[in-house]
Picture (spheres, rainbow, N blue to C red):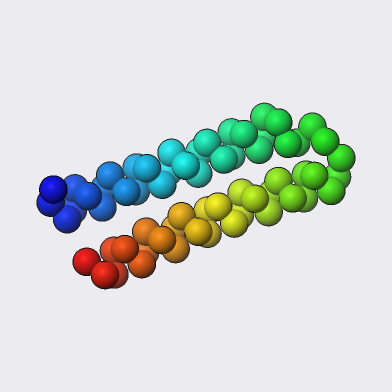
Length: 62
């Protein structure tokens, strides 16, 4: 597989992961108490950071 195509596939997979986390958090975790809502927003932030950080590291290595 070409390096550019592989990177586009990884970006697509990363965006699907982020979208799934946002969907699950907004659908199920936002119904709870305030403490759970704060943890849910933290989960979104951490997931976005980890996925983007991994993509940047992989792109720099190539």
